[in-house]
Length: 89
Image (cartoon, rainbow, N blue to C red; front, top):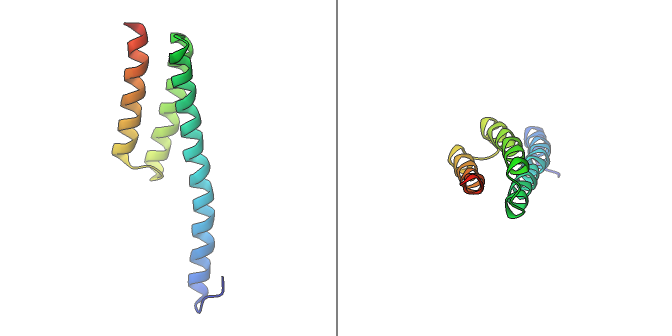
């Protein structure tokens, strides 16, 4: 990390911190999504709804912070909501 400008070095340090933070948030979203689909496979509507609420909360937070794009967040939420709604039908 030996660049010519100290500002570039600082930017690289900041980018690395953000990359690690964003990676953990995205991982948490994937884990939450997996919990929803696992509960849906087991036909456990109550657990699926609970997991869905947790996933939606995580996705909304990530979208607000710019970690995932707004439309990506909406698409993921919509697909999981459809999955849970099929259980109730």
